[in-house]
Image (tube, rainbow, N blue to C red):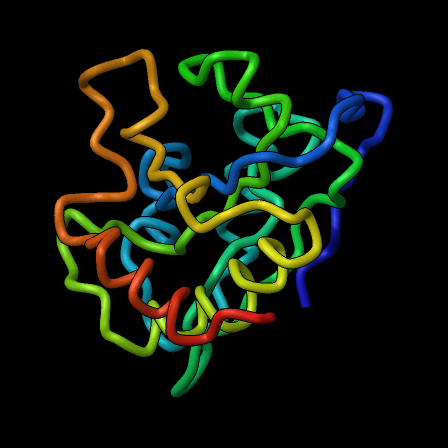
Length: 172
């Protein structure tokens, strides 16, 4: 199991309620090859090595979704009270967002339907219910970024498939 490197003294505290869920892939942030292509082996140590290389306080996602053996797992990497800092996302959105990173590079691999199901059922829908926000507030990084060259979470990630699964598993 990876050692959690959380350093609260380096992290900013959230002062506003959550209004957005932003989906990323890990290939955009960490150069470590083990986080650029997902495989069935536990790869979170590669993420934490990337954090050390960049001298960050912690992983810049609240959750990371990783394939372990035959299924996907959502791993908490940063508690909700702390902000993730993304310089290319406007402050008014970033300060009110939960960030979910999908391990791997979705420019090179097509996400299976199971990834969308786990993302919707285990992470997105409970957060929509908990924070009282509609599915329209689920955004991809490329949709909220000021940098028009950002194409995260990758060429092959289909938001329509995620929203279809969110609507399928909606919590009333």
